[in-house]
Image (tube, rainbow, N blue to C red; front, side, top):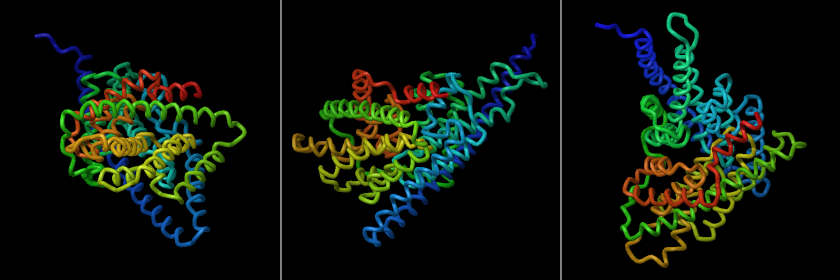
Length: 445
């Protein structure tokens, strides 16, 4: 009988070790990401208490949120300035590492993302928690692969190509686990890796992502619980005749997403030209502006979970209030991202989509017959469609929103709307936002 070649045995041992490392690293991602979410929840509560106390101080109290957010943005920017790729979402860096256009960063990235993201988002900037958690997850995956000597041959040999590939896969897979932890959405984490980060389905990568995602979400639930992020109890499947309505809704959301992407990029370009203004000072000015909005109405600022939850649970907002909130957050999101602090785009996009969907229902409801879908269904569909118009990942958007809200009955209209949003944004010539951000990052490196 012929013996198994030593290279095959070595590859099998490395393969098994990779899955063990993915599981261990996934546990760490869950604890770090869950801890980050826990800290943000308490930061939101603290910010709310400060705002309540400031409201009792009259006109002078309105300066407190302005100063609070300005200082928070400045400190977070100063932290990000000291660590390469710590500013912004970090998802574009994860994608660049997968494409071998950049090197994985681990030293100081995790504490910079954790502390800087906590200060920036906790102070009220319109940023999402998912960017820092994805980036921290990827850094943990890469570091775990190297510490597990996946990039080194057996018996003291130097690193080989397959080992380096395994480390790169762990970097990507654990980034997906980070997204799963950010929204308690394990399947969306897997789709995010395949559809957005890599654009391919590779069995080994899928399995590594599954292992990392399952362990990460399980460990994060020890800290933040297992409840869905935005529970929606009453969301029956809409009648089939409404599918064309959701198709049209997705088209409008795709156009909104294309405009939002353009504004994000344009705002970054404008800030790039302000070379005489130090980045920290620029962040402070942006933070002061967001703080002024917070003093007017806290729902206009922050990641947007509270706003989305209010819209999904039937919280009443007039058409004028919906238009105002939509317009303000449409501008405040790109401005906050331009502050160059750690923070993502996903969560504000979902809140923007909930606003757009609710507004669409408010405008269309007089034309719809009895038995039509309610405002909550339109809000859920709007969340996924606007996300897709910007990110251009329709399956990830649809499944992410289903897992966040528990609305499996709306999957068909979600898919229809995400398809329409993707086609519309493409036809408008809008590039997926992370492709643009990745190219900017590489040009500025």
